[in-house]
Image (cartoon, rainbow, N blue to C red):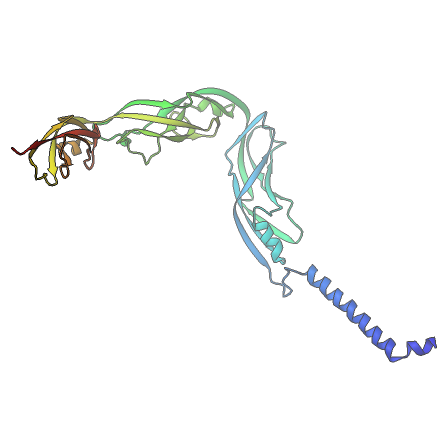
Length: 318
C-alpha cells in the first residue's frame, strides 16, 4: 500500500506543489537581498561637498588652526540604496577625521581619514591631506574695538556714539598666535551706509596690526552694536497748503501752525535742494474750531518734528 502511494499521481502532484513553494520563497528571499543592487553591474556614484572634518586632539592643551573644516567625498558602489543613504546627512554612517593625538606642535601634513564607511561602498577624499598648525593653547581677555570704515560715513555726517553689548571678550588661540593679535574688531557690515542710526549684530574677528584676520576662538563670537550718527541739518519754514471746499456758511478759514519752522536732516546735497516743507490740510466739512495733526514728508530727507498741529478756525458770514 505504502509503495503504491509514492508511485501514485497524488504523490507527484504534492511533490510538485512543495518544490514550487520552496522555489517561490527562495526567489523572494533573493529579491530582498538584491534590492537596490544593479544586477547588470552598473556602478552608482555620488559626490558630496562640504563634509565636516572632525579633529582628534587634546583641546585642553592645544590650539589647532590652518585647516579646512570640510572636504569633498566621492562615493561609488553597486548598491544604489547604500549610496543614497550615505549622501543624506540624516542617514549617513561615515564621517571624516584627522588624528592629531600624536602631534605636539608645529605645522604638519596629516591624512584625512574616512571612518565607518559601509561595506560595498568605496570612497575617495579631496583633499587627501591637510596642512595643520598645532600650538600650545593660550587664553587672554581682550577689549572689543568697534570699526567703521570712513567710506561708510557720508559727507557731512559724523559718528556721535558707538555702544557694544560686550566691551570685553575671552580669546583662545595658539601660544605664538595670541601674541600677534592687535585687536578684536567689531566691524560694521560693509554694505551699511550711515545715513541714519544703525543697530545690529556683528561677528568678531581677531586681527593683527595690518588688519589681517588671525585664527582664534572668541567668546562670545558676536556682539550687538549701536551707532548713533550726527546728520547735517538746517531749519526751514513750513508752508501750509489748504485743500478742500469751504463750507457755504463760512466766509473764510483762519489757520495757525504749532511750528512755523522745522529741522530737516540728510546729506548736504539733499538739504541744499530744500527751502521749505509743505503741510497739506483739508478744510472740507470744518464748521467749528478744529485741531488737525498733519504729517510732514519730503523725499531724501528726514524731518523733526514729523508732524505738526494745524488749528482751523472758521469765520462765519455776516
